[in-house]
Structure formats: structure tokens, C-alpha cells
Length: 323
Image: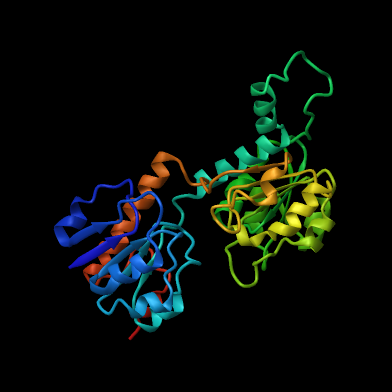
């Protein structure tokens, strides 16, 4: 059997190499669609990343393909319906990155609130000459109101951390979570409009779907407080970049911090990069050593199971196993 891995991953490949011939794309940037198209023609398994578009045309070019294993929790880059139609199981790595992403959400929230990045630039540029009473002031975090859009695993982990700051927590999702979970997190379900109007910090933790594409656009940003800060560690297209630029430029909201952008990577000519009240990081929310290693291990376990015609431990489309 032959498998293709679209980038070097932090994992021991011994078990995989004992089962199949392993070919790894050696470069730092992802393979082009043309390269992928050529590589998949004679493979039995594919281990991919969220930067790889796995569409119906690519699947058509892979007649031997038995399994797709993605090293990510999200899978919006994969045409799951097309894979399911060909009875190809699609694996992903849920759960493992919850704490790392929640931690990073808080890193961005604190950095944006307390002017950490701006302060670093200020110091390095030689502008720090004395202690000043009104220098780089930011909002208090303790006792503030946190609005969480999407109270899944990561949203709940963010809410747990907010309890240590004595924050009031609003959340919005399609359906309220169980009452016991609400009570444990001290979180209150509210309509999205209410959440935006009342929150000092708004953090996004929903998957990217047709419903959530540009969920935060001009109308939603206009509902936020002028002192509010927006955090996005979910997916870039959930936020309308042009609308966010206008809201930040005109100080309709105080600031934002993004770990994800639309597109990725963000073009250097993007007007967002001219703003001082915006922090942008290169999609590193899950980038702790242990988390990335565990993600790679789960992705390999999914791949091996698929090659052996066994159910994937973490399968996006389990209906492929139904007869």
C-alpha cells in the first residue's frame, strides 16, 4: 500500500512505514493542487492538513483511496459528501486541542486588552522614556462581561478560565446547552444581538459552515460596544474582513485579535495590517508541542485503521460503515 502525507508532522512513523510505503511532501509550504492531483493517483491513504483542498475532483483522481485522515479538528477543506459517496472514511483529531486553543484565546484576549503587543513595539522603538499615568491604557478583564459565540468543547474551556477572572458570561449557540453545564460554567444563553450589545469581550468558537460564514459582519460589529474587543481563534471567514477593517479604523470597536484570517495567510497588502488596534497571529492556537504531537498520533491512528479496513477512532462520516 502507498500513502501520501502533505507535510512533515511531529510523529513517529514506524508503525505506518511497516504497513505501507510512505511519501511525505518535503517543503514548508503546502503542495499545489497540481502536485496533489498527481500524487493521489496511486495512493491508498492520505494524511492531509486544513491547508489542503480535498475536493470532488481530487477524489476522482484517486481510485485506490481508502481513507482520508486530517490532522485537525475542523474539516471544511474536505468535500465530505463526495468522500462519503465513494465510501471513503474521513478522520479528524477532535478534543485534543481544546485546552491549547482555549489557552491561546486567553493569550490573545489579555494581549489585546492590556496592549501587550503595542507596548512591546513602543519599547523597541525607543519611545519609552518615563512612566506615564495615561500610557497604553486598556480595559479591566476581571469582572468584565465575556460573550462566547459557540459553547462547544473550546467555548466551554474558555468559559472555565473566565471564572477565575470573576467574569459574567453570556453565550450564544443554536441551542442552549444542558442546564447543568450552564450552572457549572455560570453561563447564560442569550440571542446573538444581546451578546454583542452587552459584552466587553466577544470570542468566536463556531465551526465554519454556510450558516456561520461572515457571521460577524457590519451589522453585528455595529451592535458591539465602542470599548469592546473581538477575538477569533475559530476560522477566518466567520468574520467579514472588510467590515472588521472599517470597524477598527473608525473605532466602532476598540480592538480585535485574530489567529485566523480570510484568506490564509493574510496578504501583506491587506489593510488590516495597517491597524494598531489589531493583533494577528499565524493560526497557532493549537501550537503547543504536546498538542501537535498528539494530533499527529491520532491522525496516524485514523490512517492505519482505514488502511486495515477497520473503523476510524475519530470519523467525520461514520455512515460509510452502514451497509
